[in-house]
Length: 411
Ligand code: RUB
Image 1 (tube, rainbow, N blue to C red):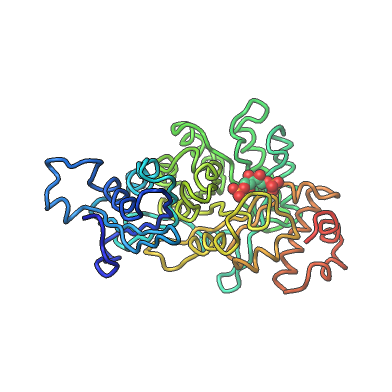
Image 2 (image 1 turned 180 degrees about the vertical axis):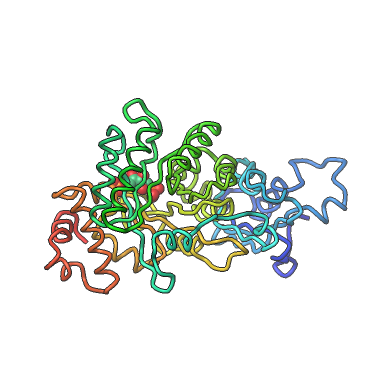
């Protein structure tokens, strides 16, 4: 009951979750209670739990590795409503993380059968759709370069649009609002979008390059829909959502509107769930769920920046999970490196995770000693150097913007 041997588990008919579990009870008891509470059981015997229910729906813990505090649980796919991520979360990362029989529990990874995965739409654009929009060739991809407008709050719509214009002018592809920028009185949403989209037109006319701008529509759900439609009607080309603070259902609702706009997912709030080494859920799990519901680009850790990541080899796995093809019928999500990055970070990031990545620098672009145009140029020069496999200090000899950036922030 609630325990199985490895060879009894069929990954085609079960969702398999990996857990790190610590506590003073026996490991077997903690495993059994995890499987019971996250499927058909409770803390005591109940009359109606018969053999039929047990044999078809009980989750089973297996691969118990007490030394490393690791176990797996197989969940029969029939436990889950098709296409319903909140219901999935209520079981697989729900009550069990708060059970007093364990001292701590962390969901480390989840593996899905194709049949379950394919109930989801996934990204409408994903990596290849965004590359195509920007004219990046499929057979020679390069990292997409982006910026977050800084200061993160306080600029008025004209100033915000001007900062975006200067960054594009320097040569980057993408501008995003910052995660707390929505519709405050100092920078109303609609004028900010209109002013910044005017600059999209201006830069595209001047340079012939396509660029992207994702306004942050994070709000209540009716307001998000209104803002998303406003962006579409105003000729916008991307949306941004703080996908964890608004939640999975709200994000999926916006994706299902099929507005023809890729969705950029900022992951603010994730650390409340992901950072503790023994408790919560790892980012790779949230990333997979967000790819399933259709986020086109997702913050997956700065790798070499100001925000905490798990150790590098673990942090890189999140990128690989977003880029993985095939993964059911779902398009790949563009992983996003962000937080404390600057031109000097670029070669390390593309070396770690390849060119199918979006690299954002906020302070590391607008903080360039010669301003945002020079900051954008320095980012582009760093990417060109990385692509040509030329060390940054060598490339910087005849690229003054890069030289000033690496003098200030290193590489
Ligand atoms: C970036 C910034 C973003 C972080 C969040 O600004 O503050 O919100 O990307 O981190 P700057 P993560 O470039 O000035 O540091 O993407 O890891 O969640």
